[in-house]
Image 1 (cartoon, rainbow, N blue to C red):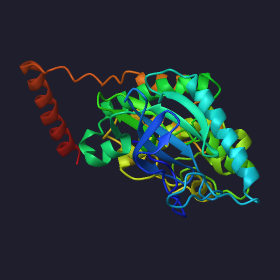
Image 2 (cartoon, rainbow, N blue to C red):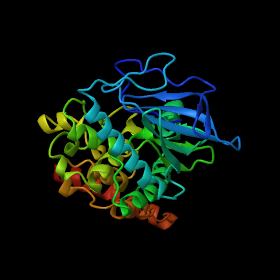
Image 3 (cartoon, rainbow, N blue to C red):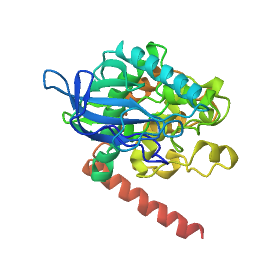
Length: 329
């Protein structure tokens, strides 16, 4: 369900199936990333949940059969700081209740780390959907999915939070086709920014220029760049050129050029607007982007059907025109 950004460089061992974690029983590992491990578990009422465990592989190591991570004295301050960021993010997300944002049910400390309990969702990621059936990526599909997803992002921003790792694999499509934002990257970004020993944990191609440089400029417009990159990736089927490479030499073909005639100019212009390298030139709010995505595209009216008289007049004009040209030659 929840795909994390960076695969681990060292294999942190997951908690075993059947392990009793506070009020939850672990069923199996769902995903493994550089920052955390996600499990499927059941609560005391037998309801399935997803549990994310804070376990950055560059700071901590858990061997097979172990429950608590091994942390060197050198890494302990960074580990604890990251744990605080993770815990605070969980607390902030627990205050959100929106159909397009993953629901955080609980967060707690155990095994010398912290855990975030989320609703377990049935479905597939947007990335899996578009890879499985390219024919689904119509203009209506893009407008519908991203407009609904932006409802969730707008709620996130209204709580003075940022996602900071928005991409197709972090948009989950429920079985009823409702998109849900998952796997927020704000805690990872804070930790990476303040802890030099950690590598950045953003996703090249979807991260804004501010992710790489001038991180003090990160804002709603940074998530909006990622939305534009995600729409671009949905149409192309590939990851866009990373923003830091674009800053050196921009080789990314604008959507208006690449897909002219295949999608409306208005949609393609909106994608290019989101992907401006200068954050000031992008939509400054989710509301502005939603407005652009929900604007009706009015097709030019078809020419009026010609009457037999009009057809005769047109034919006569063509004949006269040819006669005049031959006479003047």
